[in-house]
Length: 298
Image 1 (tube, rainbow, N blue to C red):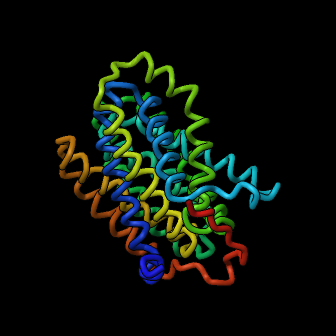
Image 2 (cartoon, rainbow, N blue to C red):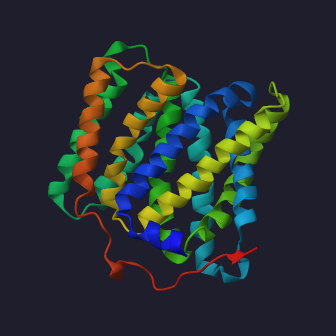
């Protein structure tokens, strides 16, 4: 209870930043697994181990699900699974920071559409300029298929943000994740299981995939759900402008992918946009639904 109170006392943007760091760390660590069992296999293993960890912590209360909850839960589960699978396909072809930058256009579009303050559109514009500098399209060396996969992941990411806030308002804490991650695992199974079986499977793949799953989806998505309960779509979506910078940071530290000076300028721009977007981005208590469903503890 004390831990929960402490987390709730933190500014919501700090939870979002922690989640972004966790997501990009797990993506960078996933590259070695992708080389063994493919992007689909890696995504499926991450979701499957995520189910195990989540259900150890909390048993989902299926009886609390209302008929009107089912479409959102199914949509969020599918979006979560394929957001990961498509992104890992992109990272297998293009640098991590570049993939995150392109993928970010999904939540950025959501931020622009959902914003009630027209003046707030300046932040997405600044972020777009930063994304262009990060991707360096004038170089002409970028993998077109990788870009398409990143755009597909971005579409899922935008939907994920909308649906996560909706499900998070209905199911409190880790309860929503314990319901949607199993759907993500089932949705990615047709793609991931064949890749895992026919890939270059070695003994270390399972423990590494399990460790990555503990970071994302368990910790990272849990923090995102908490953050989205207390932030507007616009503020959260544009705050994610910082994520390409985290992608490049993890690319440097873990994958030895060094950015150019143009990309450094892009990082500065997206961080500035993210910092500006989070100001005044806290959701009002009246926006939250009064019903909160907790998971049954084991």
